[in-house]
Image (cartoon, rainbow, N blue to C red; front, side):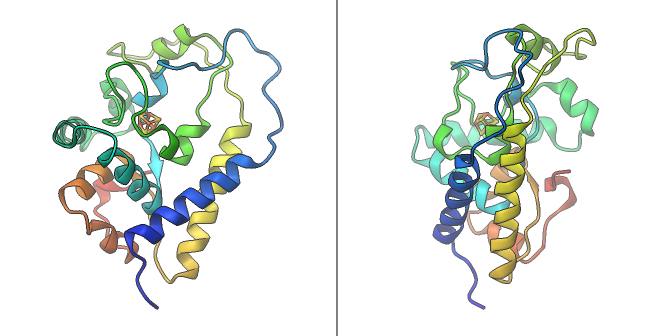
Length: 208
Ligand code: SF4
């Protein structure tokens, strides 16, 4: 079977994301205690993001056309260096921002962001997100309670399941990767995705 190229991977990701997130959801969690997420509200961008290969190729392609490519490379390398080798709780404690987050707290690739970035949402206060997972360094505040709507997570799961199926039909593997580390490798060597589609992925790049 012919190997997939980067353009085909972008098409697979964008189609799966558009389809999954166009489905009607079950509606927001009724117990809303405050405003939903807004522009500049970016605490969830301090969490590790689970991505498929098409999603990370899609994201990097968008990032490369969005702005300063050299600054982007530096941010990606720095975020990857700061989080490489950290286990789950240390990674959360480090509170390292996604390298695709700009200084105003906006996603630089918003329209091309991966499935799980579309899933995170809050129906509780922004302050609770900031104290639990946001930029304040250190341990999460155990008293911070974040209420999220589960419906977008179902959409994210559906999008990634469809991508997994599309890759399987094309005869490729579909490892799930850590967005920051995958970006670092792909930025340094744009053909890296070919190895991933053959199942050759170093453990530190894999997601949960
Ligand atoms: S890709 Fe965008 S939305 Fe996702 S974590 Fe990074 S900055 Fe946030």
